[in-house]
Image 1: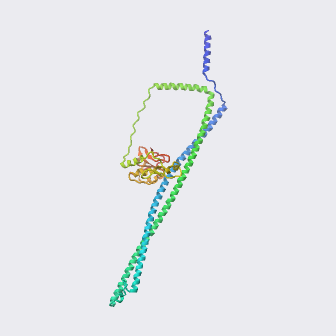
Image 2 (image 1 turned 90 degrees about the vertical axis):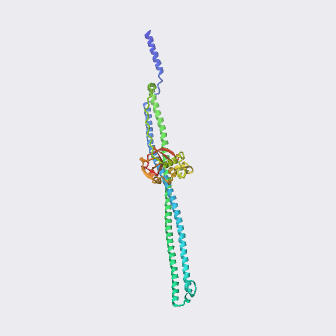
Image 3 (image 1 turned 180 degrees about the vertical axis):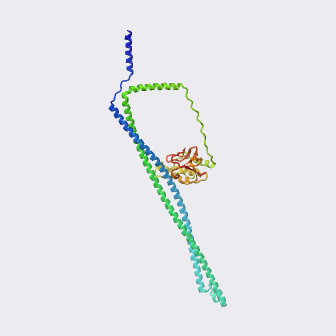
Length: 431
């Protein structure tokens, strides 16, 4: 009986084990699995291609963003130059008008002097006297007296001619001054016309840069959308591959998963029982401070006072944030032209005006406004620049690798780590 009982027990055990095993999943063919893998591989290759194209497009977009920033600052430069040329032309016009008035007055003086001399000569001829008396000659008592009276008349006439010469010389000098003033006005007008053309060219260049940036942004977005779509197809294809292969050996994977789960549970239990490792104490980092003066701190405080103020292209002056101006592109899309804020060089204008330093509204001019120091020696209160000649962007260095800046449209005045990509090798120190 015992062998029979054991045999029955063995059968019951086998039956119980069989019940614990899940039913076999469907078994797809090798051709189906291979086709699914080829589809996933094709989708993965397409995702890789689009990822590369997207990286190139985004790199180009970053370059165009810099181009737009540079073009905007050049437009600032053109506006400053045009305003300067207009001021010079107005001053030259006032000087030319004053010189013309003086020249006209000198001409009238010459005519008056000539008329007086002519009147004297006529009276002397008809009356024989500088005072209109006929006795100038006929009342002479002797030949000597007559000669003396003739000599006196000649001396008075010569004096009148000398006076006329003096007036003529004065008129010539005034005329020369008038000619010089008009020549200066012509030059100032030409400078103003050149500056106006430069402003139009800068506006055109800025608009072209904005159009290129917008076009590139649209192209990058299209690639991004295409990549996201293909990535979704890849995810579904990979899911299909996983499903087909899982149908073939799900039971083996279940066993592997169960084993890993048990091992992980044991590991977690062992970790929970072991004392937690002690983290090494962090070394305190040295605090680097730069010697600064009260003037520097005034500049820093004025810039920091406007943290969170929006960026507005063309905004900001010596008194604070102002309404921006149109750029027919990125700035307009963010409403800069009807919003109060700062652009990068406008923030520097306001910050340094607090210590009596009045900078022009163009980062390229600000770069050359003070002493150049190597970037490695920059200290708190120095200005940092990006782009050719510093004409793309400017920020105020705070020390410790940090800066305060008005970065770009859509952003606000902020404190950020110094960006070393494209930065100029020198900082500008004004204080």
